[in-house]
Figure (cartoon, rainbow over the protein chains, first blue to last red):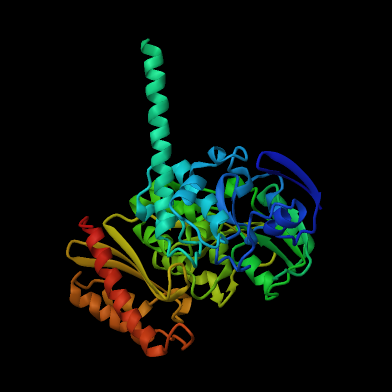
Length: 172
Length: 290
């Protein structure tokens, strides 16, 4: 059946079998292989994307269920190709060594981004809970938690700078 | 690669439309809510529906609200929304306890209240919690609605009172004053199914127990409840001794099976400890102490 999914802001229309999973729709139909295909059993979370803003495991969503919805994948995080164009969570993972092999990273990034959008200053406990549906076999999670904290602090600092610039602009 | 068998897909535009689709497509059609129980079963070919009727668009079935003397849960309410609900936090701490240990946050973003009950997995936490709460389930068919006590809803493992052309639309939980509740689960690792889990609901009348509900998951309790333990509490003093007695009675009457999650004796022991512990916590909450 024909479906249209808005992926990273762009509508994509494809004719798909109802049994096609969202993971495979993204990877095989749209060639967006940043979303990783891991355990196939709703366990590992490597396939996590945002569906209408909410992080979900895309191996357990049918592509047809996402018809008309907005899907955000790791490919949509950065605004460009430069290092400075990376999303703060990507910069955090880079700075704090939030990855080694990188297999879980796209899912971790999407969950972290969704968390910070809801809670700009999450405690390490809150971060651990948010990523608890995702498995990382390299980092022991410590560096992932640090990476998300780094991103939270970077975003807070950026907001503070923007606010003070705005305030000084008004006063002068 | 796990691939479900082929099926046709229909998206329901209303409850009425969903019921029409289910009737028209016959007993091999299945409604799908969050899909986090059904899709894994379809991937393993344990379920092979010929048609899926997607309830995902039925916003009318989502939400938690106080309605008269009940709290009404729409069947499409996601686990995450139960956990975030201020109504649940105020009146039904048992559901907050339970939701915190159901799968993981990503699964809770998709899985629904109605889907969990209809899956009727013997290890399912909400079935035990709603049974402890003596909730009732609203089932809609083309000939109208009927209300079934949740304790009559489950007919056996993966079997419910819902016919193939019916839908669960709501779960109703009565609001009771002077009542506290709690849930606790032992799992092998975070987000896993229970080795054993217990939920307790206590209504106090001064120092005495006016009424008690005890729900159990994963230990072979008929209809997810411990009726002998509940009976022992009714009219008894709300004391540690009563809770210990109830825990022992519950452990005596469950019928757990040995599996990779543990042997029978261990599961019985867990039932005794978890029932006693959740009763103690429920009593403290009923008194406003916790």
